[in-house]
Length: 294
Length: 295
Image (tube, rainbow over all chains, first blue to last red; front, side, top):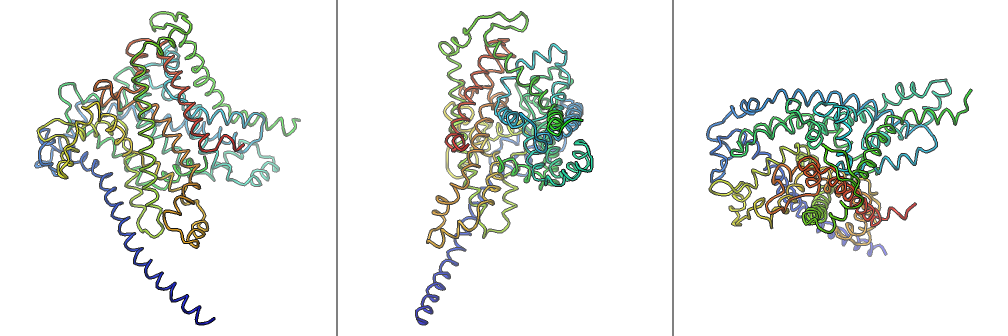
């Protein structure tokens, strides 16, 4: 009996040795594939950066000039002066500031109502809320345009700001998931002490959900910064343009001015990247959260 | 003194009221209005004129462009979503290997393209695909190094949609993050069970990973379908729908009818068809995922 088990362990050992070697090989291959994929994902960026510093003639040069012969820093100066860049930046930031207020106030309130208070019709309305996530913007775009037009809001920031004060299904969903995780006993004991729902919401729940609030703030920034079709439809006045739609004006019909366009691209991507690297944790957490608990 | 249930009812509805009002004003009401407009001939300068189902009949029987844009958008949905889901899923499976170190760096690298604003993404890829200049665009120069003669990409009706699929896959890194989150949630014991039975990576993937990950896959598929149906920027910025209408997307057709041709009624009919198509595709995906018969 004893002998047999020794043989067995020997067998397992050699098998394990074999697998160990096999492991390294396999890991090497995986690293190699990942490295290639990473290069593919990163190269367009490097190209964006390198083109933003080039002379227009150099962009189509053969072979590719990764480092421009002369660094054309004035592409960045031009990018901010060919179009009223700072006006558009100011517009974008104004819309973002208001959207942040609207988004943080409305979504937290609504999410609390869906997560922590029991009332008739709650589940039904929540299903409707989830369904609205599926609705293409194009369906409401025309009536909304006509509605805002009647209010004389077209060409102002209002059509982009006011709706943020009425909740966004994506954020409500995200916050609700967070709120549900807070133990009910905590809220109940406060209720017994006579605290009103609003006090519980603002004094107990919100302080516990700072990461979720950070996520909502970050994603609101991103959505608004990147939004294209909203400003395109509602901001018909070129003085009110956001960066996302204003930047296109660099590209004139006859001359795309690629280098200036790429410089503007770097300028517009940079803030997002900085925010991402500073607040990476929240990004990953937020995206994972909405995905998993779905 | 109110009883607890009444108090909860009032409080709950009060807290939810911003969304309830928002839903009525900015979603439900426009939705119904859009349906009404879809039954009219409506030029913004004149009052809408009721014409019954004429818009719909024209769309389905005579509008050649409708068929074209619908085909293009569905092509993007079926091919584009498949490619991006399969690619990101494979990358996630690689990244999920517990033996690897430093995967968070790779994860960041794959995620970053998601952050680039769509407008910038569009102009950047226009330049990458560009066929201008002597030696072709950037991508074709790279392909040239490997000895491949690249196509005209956005300039060639046969390749233009493929070009958009590649671009969309490039910026689908958020799917990887979601997949990885899901993979982390799969209990280790299941893998160990397969190992004990002598199964390798392949068995683990087929018998454990994919079935356990199914809800997340379906979630990613559905959100991708919804986003892809609404794809607008690339057609609007990069190609203007060309060449030969090969990248003319449904959302662009709705936009042009409404805001460039002034056919608000017709555009509304198109948008309602879009809503129903999206709804049907979502339901099919949910059904395939087994979510509808779970209740």
